[in-house]
Length: 262
Image (cartoon, rainbow, N blue to C red; front, side, top):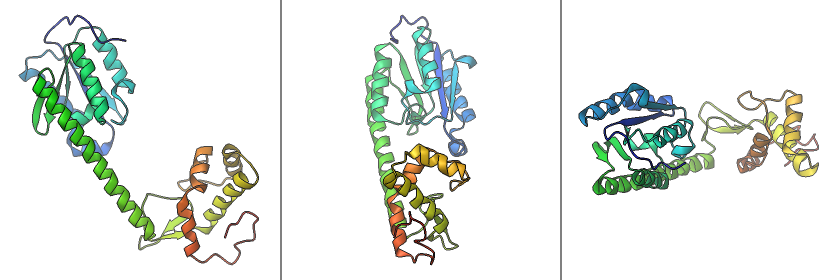
């Protein structure tokens, strides 16, 4: 569905707003804050921005390409009508998280005669209808993705260090408990279940789904009390972190079951 249309009104704008979590809302990118920002920008630029032309996407990650999001698809359908010339967003990461998605979409919009307006890009408004605006956006999008990558690397390094020290590195992990000092200790009842999963799949040839059904039938719950799925069984018993239980003494009764691994 091509965006190329004869644009009917040089002043008409549409706005896109996204909040994916309560944390983001608390940090100042709430729906109300974004609405206020795009409305004030439209008024300053003398654009026509009607209330029903402000599209709101909630609970969707910016890592999903724009046109693959539910409201993103609606945005595209509305742009295809040819009624709009301007698209307003409050911040770059409200519409994009990935550099290639940013650049491909901005080029597509430009080819269709659509200008993207960012109210706040490092404290300044940016209009991609100009060559300088598109250049600045390209640089900032690349820097933003690099920064997220560096943060992810630092987070992973921190998690790896916590794992090596047997400290809590995630909210919960089946097979392990956290003591008062934050140290991880094997939960041998859950470790028994993990070995049962391994035994049924690797030795007896059961499918992950069959093992999940077996656990649910026996009313064995996940760490947070949920039911087992084949995918969660696979992730649990193949987690290499369980090998570190060898650093801890086994209970006396360990080995009484055919699936117990030492």
